[in-house]
Amino acid sequence: ESSDAGKTSEDLKMNTTAFDFGLMYQMDWKNLMVAMSARNFSESLKYAEEQFELPLTFRMGVSADMAENLSVSVVNERPRDYFTTYRLGVEYSLMNMLDIRAGYVTPSDEAGINLGVGFKLAGLGVDVSYTDFGVFDSVMRFGVQYTL
Image (cartoon, rainbow, N blue to C red; front, side, top):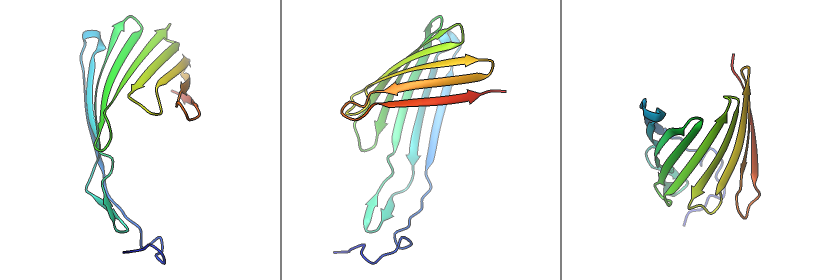
């Protein structure tokens, strides 16, 4: 039986290269977009005596403008060693200045409902979002963007 006792961080160091691939195709009809990606495409890693793989994940999604100022997206995410999740998102835009967003992830032990709002004016954008993590504390995210 091996032990990591007495080994330095140099003895336990590892390196790898991983690749992400993706394709997007946008159509004129309802601004329809179809996308797919593969993340963490790499060889197996060995840390100490344990061999494992990075979490290879495949995603496929579709988004469209369903009505004036209303966008809807659906994403299927399939990790290598975890269950498949589905994500639904909706965004409503008011006067090209205020965006109201809602999303839902299923099945999920942690994240379920996500809510957000964004404001844009004269190159400045501010985003705020809320994620309910069930038994864990909820998370508030803030973002600021400035475009010249």
